[in-house]
Length: 237
Image 1: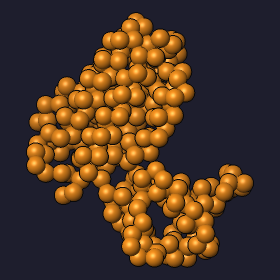
Image 2: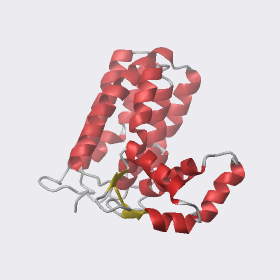
Image 3: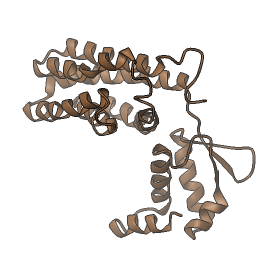
Image 4: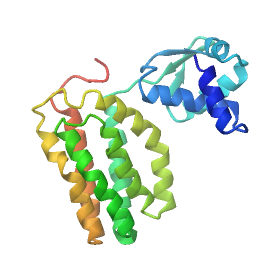
């Protein structure tokens, strides 16, 4: 199942640690829902598929467990992909608001014309996704936010974001599958121009306004995700 993909990784970097390569492949498949939430991962089967011993597989699974992607079941060889739920998403976005709000503040202080131009180039694509004309929101949204984080020039904010980034990618990929189910979601129109509203104070070097715009945007994203799901967790259905 994975052996040809491992070889492709090793062809590029022959000195890569095997367990890291396995972890990266499994993580990518979990993010892309090729391995769905709560699916069982059997150590022996993965090792057989890869034609490797159990040791690098166990090391890879341990790494994925450390970032919350998998949990160990009761059975000796039982590992499971962690489930997704709305409460966890809301906690994640609360952390996002704190980290990215401060990053936007710092970005407004330090960003040069090159960063601002790159942010502005992502705006039309993001607006199209909220109009239902382009399904690839992941190509415009997280790159926009990541650019602001990196432009903050604050290694502690960047480190905090690195910690939540894999889980953030996982939730966004999953949510993008359902983004336009509710065509009358009022928060789509609300969110549509909010990236532009973040760039504007960054461009004018107004850190306080940039922080407020970012935190407003992330709060709107939560409202968008929870719209029409009162009493029902879409991740559990």
